[in-house]
Image (cartoon, rainbow, N blue to C red; front, side):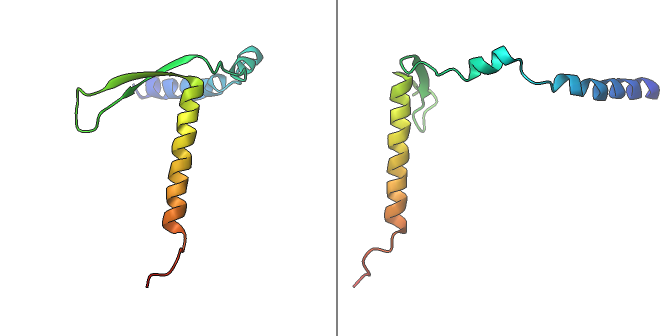
Length: 90
């Protein structure tokens, strides 16, 4: 019984380098191709406090990128306002 477990463990360790091989060149180049900014991406927009209030929102990839960029700029603006010394009170 113990020999079987040891043999299975040894086989697993020996097979690990084979599983960690590099991606073939044709797959690596396909991952680097620019994606179409006009493709449609749909996401679920869940309403806070409701299990059933989710809506499906579909936009192009460019629109999602612009929305994320605008949201990030808004957060950075708030952080600058909250951490800037500003005028002293009084």
